[in-house]
Length: 124
Image 1: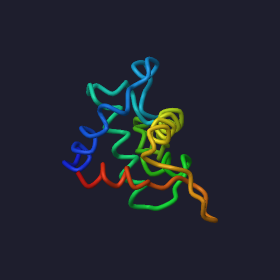
Image 2: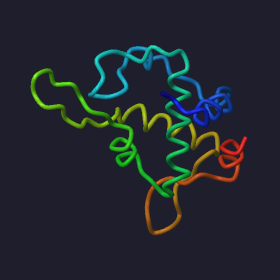
Image 3: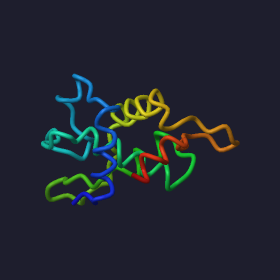
Image 4: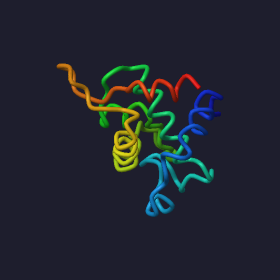
């Protein structure tokens, strides 16, 4: 179930964030069995990442992989936590950064933070 906030942010990002050609053939992470079926899954993932960056302050790609990961169904064996796809997250971060929605943190703590234009997208 996707929250209404993330769907609204995804609508705002539709013009600036485009899904690469290779993204049609990849899974969202090691936990997934198939590719995402929604048409706008790339924008939904980008809006979820943007919201997490806004809430958690300077945050890097590795931490986002852990946050967005899920449990992998291992059949009769116990389920295991698996990270989300790093390539997808890095590409979305690069797209958001090139559109001046996020920027690299200049403080001691490394990661990315939301810019003023990114906050406007989140508030709309």
